[in-house]
Image 1 (cartoon, rainbow, N blue to C red):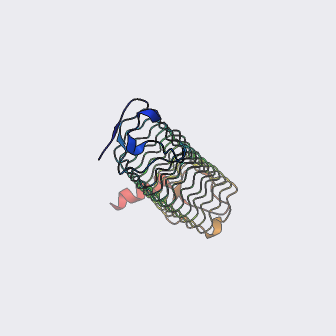
Image 2 (image 1 turned 60 degrees about the vertical axis):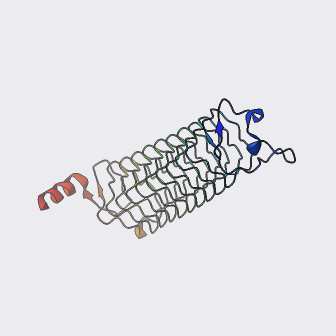
Image 3 (image 1 turned 60 degrees about the horizontal axis):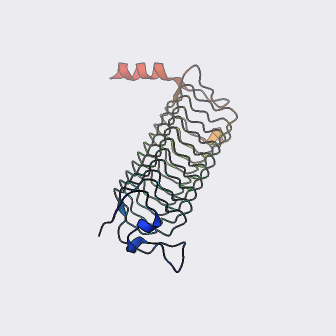
Amino acid sequence: MRYLITSLCASALLPPAIAQSKADPGLVSWAPTLGGYCENCNFSRRELSGYDLREARFPGVNFTDTRLRGTIAEGAQFKQASAARVDFSNAKLNDTVFSDATLSGAIFRRAEAERADFSKADLGEARLRDGRFVLARFGGARLDAANAEQALFIAADFSAASAIEFNASGANLSAANLSGAILVRADLSAAILDGADLSNADLSGARIANASFRDTRLQGARFDDVRGSRSADFSGACRDEYTVLPSGLELADCAELLQQTATMD
């Protein structure tokens, strides 16, 4: 059965199957599906693990400190959500929209969030380890001090994102758009960034030991004071006159490389 929730979702308006438990006010009774439309719903500090929220439209929802482990919320819309420290571990969030949401300290460990939209969301100190974020959008988002070890970000969009002290060690960022991203003091150790666009990105002070930057575009990128550059692989990468490379590294000019490729074709 699918419940349709409307209005502001005050607890008195909730159907019995999802009403607040009298035995424990911090829990919500189990229901197979929770969907429909609800603006500014307050589900803070609830236990909603395992719920089916597919295609739900909850703009401005409050998921602060809520447990949604294993939840299926594919195609759901949580724009401008207040969801600090929400737990989406092992959740299915493919095509889910979190744009402009507050997700600071949120947990997305082992979550599947392919093509999810986190544009301009606040993911500061979020835990994204082992998650799948293929083709996800993080443009303009804040990921400062977030932990994304071993996560998959293939072809994801991080353009103009702030990722200061972002831990992406061992992560796969192949073909990702990191143009204009701030990766100051980020940990990219053993990360794969093959074919990524790092134009105008700032990696000052980043750790890049054993990272792969094969075929990356580095026009205007800054690598001031990076650590571990000697073991990083920059094969096929290119730069321009504004690129600040690690000491001792020489790369081909992107414009010249493109011209050579066109001539060969």
